[in-house]
Length: 239
Image 1 (tube, rainbow, N blue to C red):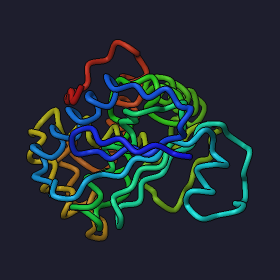
Image 2 (cartoon, rainbow, N blue to C red):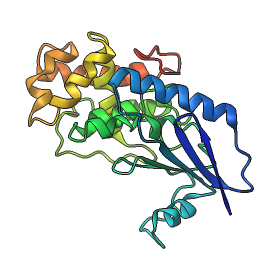
Image 3 (cartoon, one colour):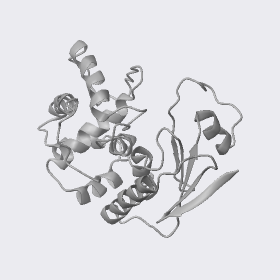
Image 4 (cartoon, rainbow, N blue to C red):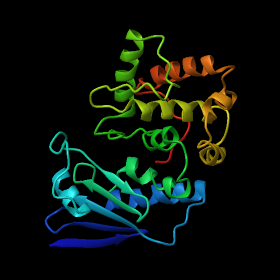
């Protein structure tokens, strides 16, 4: 008993009793069109967008009866880059920017996850990641930095686990913010392609306005602190 509705280049699927918001769907299309123009994405095939009632229903649509960790969060969403499908819940609705931005993953399948993940949360939405804003997550990581001022964020072997956030995403966000301070959004595509090279960030620290690898680590910390301010100006506005 699901309904299908096509708005622009997005084909929405949702329960028949869901109150579909056409205005949000139109905004999602504007957002997608900007992404396609900037990154020269293929827009021949429609994006399929599923809006489930909750995370359990999302998993059912994906074909799973049960997954480990089920029930830990009411907010979840996933992007299937091979089939160009977004799965989300009614909480995020028709315009889930975090997942829409992942369309660039189709063009850059080998890009470093810091950049693809970082770009997906680089927006002023109240739901940048797991139902919280960019500033909220950066503040949480800033608190960690105060307690661990010598931590090296460029060491991929050291994983930080903080409740309700994903630190790697915001290391990527800081890198993107630093890069866009020097270059254009069109240039971002260039480093997306090259970032899969081993040691890319250590070798190319200068692309992010740093004078050394150590300086880049310091700039990442400073940028995360900067972005913890809800009024911080982002270098890219896709709204």
